[in-house]
Length: 334
Ligand SMILES: NC(=O)c1ccc[n+]([C@@H]2O[C@H](COP(=O)([O-])OP(=O)(O)OC[C@H]3O[C@@H](n4cnc5c(N)ncnc54)[C@H](OP(=O)(O)O)[C@@H]3O)[C@@H](O)[C@H]2O)c1
Image 1 (cartoon, rainbow, N blue to C red):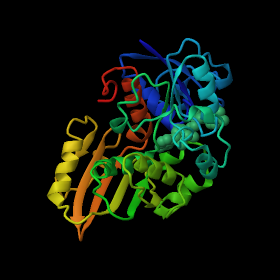
Image 2 (image 1 turned 90 degrees about the vertical axis):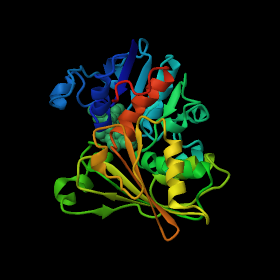
Image 3 (image 1 turned 90 degrees about the horizontal axis):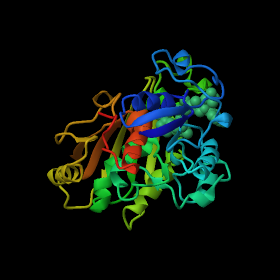
Image 4 (image 1 turned 135 degrees about the vertical axis):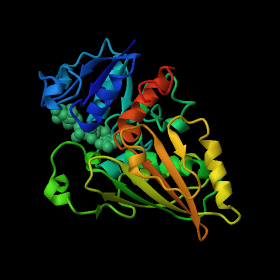
């Protein structure tokens, strides 16, 4: 039995992970932390959540754990990761702290000096379908961001075959839980209801360097992205629509076949029939990614839908844990 801890148990990704762990027969939740609700029970904070005692993070015993999931803000995660690794505990970090291999890039985009740059080389970027060689036995996994998960899975088959030419446009929409549970003016009901709002468009969003550096690792070519995220007044879900210029000679049927072949054995990826589009409802409350493909005027339009709290966060974290510990990858997730 794997003994697991969840730091940040009262956040949206933390509580989602605790619900998933409750369905996993090979894992026992031994620790759940919260600063603001220490001493209370998780079910008091989230009615319907598992009855789990909440412990203050600075009093959390690490020694008896096998793995910790860090559902914390960036900066804080790295501090806890250092302590956990020193105690011999594996770490799966849902924050951005270990996603960028370059500490200068981290400082530029996250406004912080990296708290543990010595760990960056060791961290495995856990887009599970593309990382199975490095994940088994890994001590530190950087769980990808939600936008990068949907966009990168939409581009992975194309990058492997160099079936991209020119600038890629990623137009993405996500639900408000993507911004976390802490109250902010920009995510209050009256501010967002009956609105659809782009933000950090073009080359201004923090997930841009994560996507571009991962793409560069799959090919000799460094693609440039234009990335326009939008906040949609719904609780959860993420849909990316990507516009990809195709090199001459690639036909729609060939692209479709490429995606079908690449993802043929994937339990969590559905390549839709040619011409069909992905939508949030196909995947919400699941760890799946749904991918649709259409070609128009030499441009491939890929639609890629995930649930931001599952495949975009807690579900993929559990999928990664399964691979790290050599368990069946779908345990607790189907
Ligand atoms: N939401 C998503 O869709 C999503 C997707 C992918 C990745 N992520 C990443 O996952 C992480 C968690 O996201 P979230 O949406 O779950 O955030 P959240 O809802 O705001 O929850 C954050 C959790 O961390 C705790 N916390 C906050 N500041 C802390 C500190 N300084 N020290 C210790 N604990 C602290 C909070 O509870 P207390 O204040 O009670 O301690 C809470 O339990 C973030 O790094 C986020 O970028 C989120």
